[in-house]
Length: 602
Figure (tube, rainbow, N blue to C red):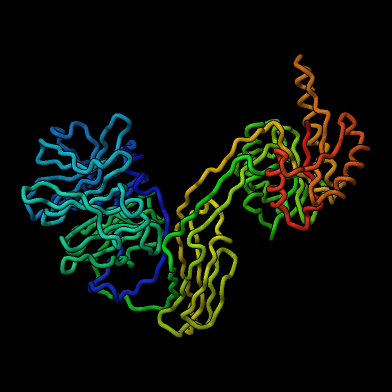
């Protein structure tokens, strides 16, 4: 049950946009009040609700939601449900009509069991005797957080059934015979490509809910929409309540009090309940920056091809960063180190070497499996291992983003007040200026890497009043992975070597060759056939004829390689390894092609 409920909160994608308080027509704001002692604990507290003129909330106890009543003076008492009809069902998100309407019906969420697994659905408890399933959605989806309007004619709830985005707001309407008709999704401008949860309707024409797809200060933000002349208006955020964290489950308790749930810092548990009180104070306009994108979602198609690239014993970092393919090779190498605990990787010294070590350590690879060569190479890193199995090929990953570019507009309130401003991503400044409004065009294909969850754009500036102001914009990225892998004979996999720095390369090459003879010696020792490799073949490409000739002469004179017959072979277009080798060579800078030699040991 706990897992099913938390599934609602599992995704935290963000979109930020500017909003002016003049859009909100209410003549009051909500002010944060101290939550009474005893309500929040180190457990998760959530779903504050007015229940029969009493303040009820839920708490996770032994992995299940349990309801409690607060009756003033920090008095907290567990609430017991009559089990005549419930028969042991776990109650989550209970809700009733406004207490001034006599209607004993209770709506709640609970799990229900199918032949394959359990799901979260909504139910209707009539009196103490009858439980009717209402929101048992199609298998694979959930329905949760039911909310009945004060007139009893509409039942809102949240579900991840087929809709506009992840979880969306749906509703039932009561038919002429008292039956529930639907459900139907709310309008597209109420729902979004993100997640909409926790509907609350204090009036048939007012709807509060939480969303992480409409923009705001944090993850989930509390929004409000009103219905005029039968049409729901665009939602607006309750800005005085929302924070940069996840704020949700807003509910009005009475004429002057409300409550909500948040995971903001300073609480006692991961989720805590916060209290609000109406104030007649109207917020005044201040100076701020506003970023507005022309897109709300970036679609990323990732093409992944296993065994597409041969292992490269060298890396050419660009701007002290790993390329996508370099990163994929390091990730694959890390996984192999975990699988072969007696294996060890050796690297030359370079500014990025320490970053690769940190990457390995983050994968729980011990330092005993990582060796540092004393050679220092300015433009590249050389890599070798002491195990034949570590030289396997690795995948190629290609990312295509849609749209390929979009605009971000920057403005200020009030206008013509900014002295200077800049827009940046991480540490890269995209644009600077002294006047607003302005805009930038952002190219996604060259900047967004595979498996990136979101794109974060920042703006900061200073105004004529000496104030430092800032804004942030976070656009979610939805990805789709396409596997284009082909079958490949992995018994004969080449390794690419860079021979320009031949003295630094030789110890790594010796380690590579020795890993084959060592394994063969172990096979012979176990009384199996002696299949010790005797052939080292250097592939000659269109670029490296001179490098192959020079390296061939040198290797033949090395005592460490006396067990091998060393020769060269032309890499013809129809060779079974031609495609892999040529594709892997293109991962290096063009000016280095002449120094790269593909090698295979058989």
